[in-house]
Image 1 (tube, rainbow, N blue to C red):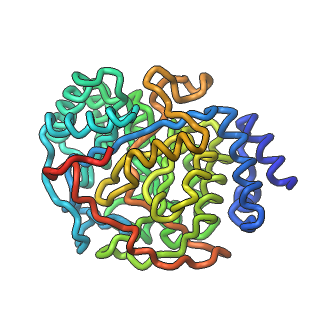
Image 2 (cartoon, rainbow, N blue to C red):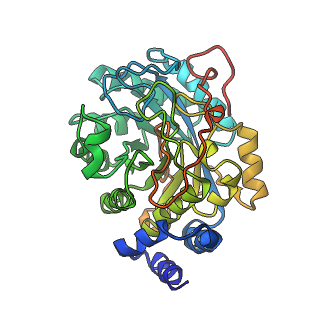
Length: 381
């Protein structure tokens, strides 16, 4: 396929494809799916070999968020039956993080619901970062605390944070359709705050909240221009009690095409398969490893993920290897250093789909998290 040959050549040169080429990836047929995966896989292996970076989420504060993001089970007015608790103490968060590190995670992502941290919250998270680093000096720590005010990114950096996550989520033109309590520009500004403080920036998207193919391309091109070190790709988990609970349009094939498009547009960036992979890719998850070079181990913020051992078995069976703590993630021309992955999947996105067949609702695959942080039960790691 001439399109795929062109995209591979551009990816190996780190050259931006045209919008038309990116859109064409999303409209390829299911019959051509394996060719699309194989082509994007060449670009992935050029920059990241067969390594898979593992990341582990710790939800520091769950629920009761004042923002109205339609996809989120922690949103203002959410009727989802999720765990709700206030800030974990530093030792509690450190214990939760240690479970992920023991399971093979190279990065711990500290997430808290809310519009953004107060200065007191930054102090609290700084102590948590210190507690985690004291136990595991080599682990990368990424914070995801919402919108940052002036000086807060610098304080997190000084406390030992390696990265900051704040997703763009969707295109600028459709952002007001999913959130009204803050703007797309607010999100861009926070990513720039993180970059300006010397933190490794992590920013991604949620695919499937009613957006068109053009919207998906818009947000991925915007991310390429913003130049984060890592781009998490979430697929909507339609949690009951949220406005998007009825959105079940994504097929595994559609999800793979989205991941391939992201890899072609962001060839040398860490692309993470984040929230919703178990729900929407299901048995086709191993194919996604040919497109992404990073995944989350264990559970998400408010929903359960695949068992940690199953993730490790999947990686090994597919012929990939877990990236070790002594290995740099990013290619040398991007600085090489280990801050190339990131945080906080939103409990994900599924794709709206021009041309994709509607998938049956699989509500049996959505399980609210009842273990790990904020509970007395052992975490999934």
